[in-house]
Length: 271
Ligand SMILES: [Zn+2]
Image 1: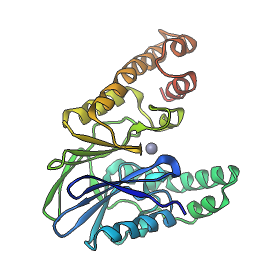
Image 2: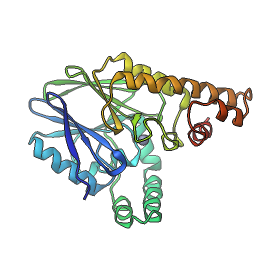
Image 3: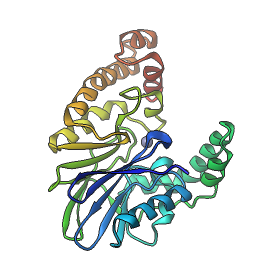
Image 4: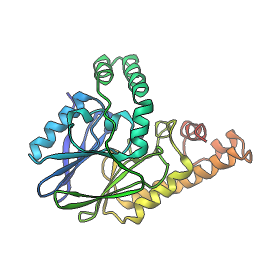
């Protein structure tokens, strides 16, 4: 069993790190309620997280999902019934494609020789969020202000960031990745990625002037890390636009890209 590890980022604001997928989730404590940021990738993983939250606090919880990718939200059933916040596009995505994604990832894990995880994904209930955000929403979590914001299409069409203003902490899902490669991978640019919009989303993160940014994968980072990720993304977005306009050939774009060829090709395939 893959046990996680809590990191206290500020008073009553935690990140929880996992070896599995290098995933990072969050927890915000208010005076008489708490908020769980993302629920892990299947019902068993969700139950582990729920128990870990209960080891920290007995307070009633709400859930907020950063986006609809399975590793961030297929554990939600371990927390319901409770309010489940997300961008409205997250609900639409889970309703339209959640079952297909579940079958696809179960097959992928089975192919990779991990039948236990495959079975757990295949039998996890997909829970559509019931508290929806289109652009911005302020919540009160047990008296503590938390702001949810969507900065436009980027990693998906419905990325939601979770800001705890009194702590200077911003949970950003997969808008930022702090993986072993130190930056984005081909996997970052999935079918629902919008490369051209991504720099604006990172600008939105930086404009919030956070002290700590919590990525969906990897350890928490500083705003400087986010700014450094933004620069090559701007170049990549320009190359994608140029290829789409027929001004630059794919091979030229790959040669000029600040990213490895596989990452650039993945991004170009989404244009
Ligand atoms: Zn993702």
